[in-house]
Amino acid sequence: MNSKKMHKILLYNTLSREKEVFSPIDKDEVHMYSCGPTVYNYPHIGNYRAYVFADILKRVLQYGGYKVKHVMNLTDIDDKTIRESQKEKKSLKEFTEFYTQEFLKDIKSLHIENPTKFTKATDYTPEMVEIIKKLLDKKLAYKSEDDSVYFDIKKFKNYGKLSHLVLENQKENAAGRMSRIKKDEYDKENAQDFALWKAWDSKDGDVFWETELGKGRPGWHIECSAMSMKNLGKQLDIHTGGVDNIFPHHENEIAQSEGATGKQFVKYWMHNEWVLVDQKKMAKSENNFYTLRDVIERDIDPVAYRFWLLMANYRTRVNFVWEALEGAEIALKRLYGLYTALGKKVGKINKESQQKFQGYLADDLDTPRALTILWDVIKDEKISDADKKATVLDFDKVLGLGFADLKEKIIPEEVLKLVEEREQARKEKDFKKSDELRGKINSLGYEIKDTAEGQKISKI
Ligand SMILES: [Zn+2]
Image (cartoon, rainbow, N blue to C red; front, side, top):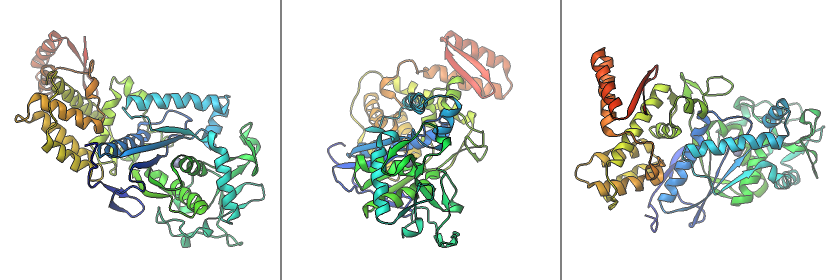
């Protein structure tokens, strides 16, 4: 497929609220930017949905024959990193470096490929200052009494085009300006002039830059505008993030970038939906979150979480429960088992299945239906084992489930069947049969533990 581009890929664009045919600005290379983590603690698994989504998107484009330059930022300076590093009495650099390394380990365990480049916000302050100066020149920004710089949202006529916000409903002050907000995060009900540059105050401690704008630090939103345009040019093909980023973060990125360059900043804005817990958004503030450490503590392979996410479209909300993740892990191990039973020979890709697989992915990354094709191929009696193997390996270029390097993860089909039978026996309260089956499973070299979430299988 690499020599020829997949003829039509449809992607849902938040800007138009429609699926659009993807067509990159530069035909040879797609320029894509993803808002990365703020490295101030361990991200929760809900946060990782954004990175699994961006990874799948990038892989689909590559599978479709495109070369992709993908940049992801690491926010190592904002209100939260400063506050938390001070609590731990560490320098900002030492503090954020620790969580950066933890993030890198986590994404590896989720089989998320590293982007072409990671960018750290603190490496780009000169570029941020340049953009802010331009905005001041164009009178799209102004200095406040304390020497901070704010974006004047009323002066930017397209403000609200991404979040479909109507500014008329927002309050103005006596001087005819919107009220101002210095904080990095705020809600849509209160669209306000936001800080591009925050003049130093004592709460910032030793975190500041001496620049032409004075002593201070950048606001969060300007960081992404500077990092993306420096590395990918003034116009990007795709910008991704979670739906939470639409307002204010991405709306503000548009205002800053388009205000400075006069050009359309991003062609396709793409956003993934939330992961819920008990029908509420998984969030630090709700204290209803889990991290990958919790997943590993329960003896679940993190890649099962990737697999579980792929069972839903990225634009639908998913409700996380441990039983579902356990179920996903069992299903994934079954796939691993069926795959390894195919033998060593790798044949030819089954074209008919590949076409269906591509067709689903090209329809706004329909991973749930693409996964059904994976199961169909593995179970299809008309396809030879060697061809099945080649086809699964081809699909896995996008899915990233790790078929190519399976070793320890495989549980033989024979054992999985016994586990299923035992599940049934337990449901029917046939404990004699359940114990017999446990004995059989042990004799095949596996042990089984009954937990609140179901049966856990491991090698003896
Ligand atoms: Zn961002």
